[in-house]
Image (cartoon, rainbow over all chains, first blue to last red; front, side, top):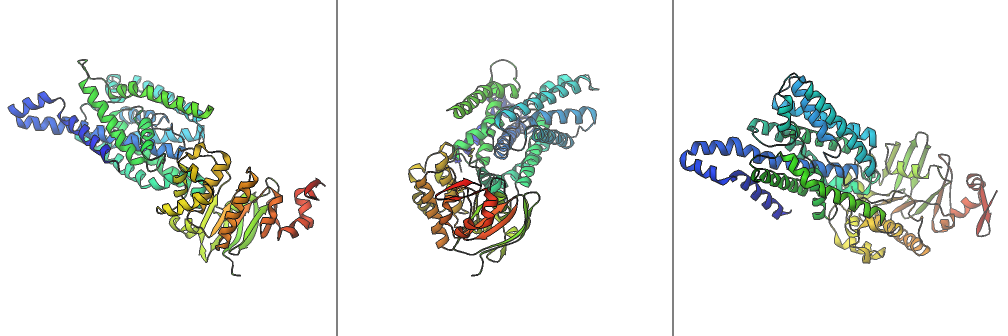
Length: 318
Length: 233
């Protein structure tokens, strides 16, 4: 167990609760009950979502990479984040499913559909180029359909709302929304962790796994459904956040000597750390306004993604 | 001798016609046959991959009913595919075969297959021959009573072929039943028994010399012995 990683996550969470420091201190002196409200109603959901969503992205990314046998599979690269966003927009604006839990269900359905389309387009164990091409196609299609759905939405404020929502943000989420995102994500995440040892053995190939008495098809289905539920629920509340689900598992496998299954828990911790850290950065950035979280992870994640791609190419050509 | 493995009604539609098979302990058996004759299908159906028909009993236990923890101790399977995606080092790869950590067993296998100098090398960066040995060590790690190995001797130098044959013979001497698919017919002498496949049917089940002399050999392979080589029929 990587205790220092857990300690770093807890420190980031604590920092998230007390940042910014000055208004909190003022309130504690002038009106402690409002200070309590600020902590519980505003900052706690934000910190919990940062931790939980980050952990979800790390976990789902690690599990998807293990099941696709590809280090580039992740909720965003496979298009499941975009699918979840589309599902949530359709459910919220067209089906009137605005309750947090039903919205989470729509997100999960969208993410699941995206993953099924990915399997259909790229196969069960796609090589990197098929995975990326199919993922890009799904992301583009889901993004375009989301824009169309927003443009035609009955609500004239749909686009404005969606900017705050779908670009990835933890601002002003209620405790109810936090629960709707994190309770399904936690259940699905525990389900994924249950399969850690089996996902390690999957490194030996599906045939070996079958010879050992496991059912590779069922394992794949469980991982895909659990990942879709976890990611879909979080996206329906916080919008799509890129790169954390890609980078966290890659970093986690450095800690587990390359084992894809045992990387699940470290990937969750690293994901929680990355997303909480990015959210702290979003709040502390001296620009006088909040930057959407998804923009920060994208700006920080793109160079890392390119580095991973280059390394894959070097490895293939060397 | 009481058979260690008993298989009844094995079949895979289109690839393997129904057949029964039993393997006694302490023996090495080769499966031969031209490309596409069903060698691998027979091996996979014994390993219970792809939900084949029939049933396989090992030491009186129905393999389909065994939990993964027990199955590893009973049945070891080496697939023909050797690619490794994850950068797992050789020592860890071998340990993946074990249900609980046993560094003594891992070290012994690394020694036996001369992998000790490569113990900390990533398995995805090994040569083909090195990778076969590492993957074989993984299969051997839990001392399974039945070894089902797909082409463990292909693309290897003579030294490694002989080394692996010796390792397999040692496993057989300890009581395992070893079943191997084989392309290089010059190696048949190293086996106690040969199953010959053709078009999904088992056409012969006999000792190596009897198999080669038999009439079905030439029909199956479309070559016949010519001194130490073969000639086309």
